[in-house]
Length: 207
Image (cartoon, rainbow, N blue to C red; front, side, top):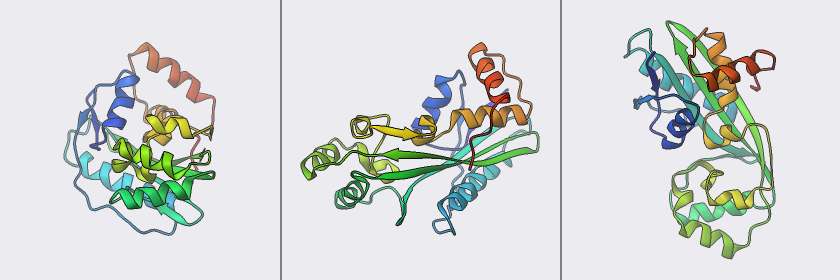
């Protein structure tokens, strides 16, 4: 079965490779929604737009996976920083506080669709301005929502998360396996088979 990732994100591709998939990357080139009633609505809509655009252009027996991720706190959504100054402001805003990471997930096969949102709470330790500037100097924050990557050096700043780690990276793998079960995807990789069996007896983990 051909697996198509409707995203240019190298981190999402890495997560799929990590669990035994070999996805073909196809950018959807859709215009994303930038304003919504809630972060959950936004990521759900954007994931659906990306996935449906690609699904319409490929064979019906291809498995299409799309996702959209945002970082949000009580003041609203934090996107990717436009420059170093905005990255500084974002990291100051996250410092010493807990925020949420929402990912919309779209999966389709043969005309059937799964669409859900997974949410993880992430807690930052207090950050000094010196540490913030040193982190920004690595270049890591500049292409990431909220100006940080949990899979990189920012892991040093995060003493606690509640929920899916892979969701914060950009693709909630446990939710993906639930979606594959719903779509009756037959997986022949034994590592993936174990995860499928685990997902049958649990809630989807979506919000």
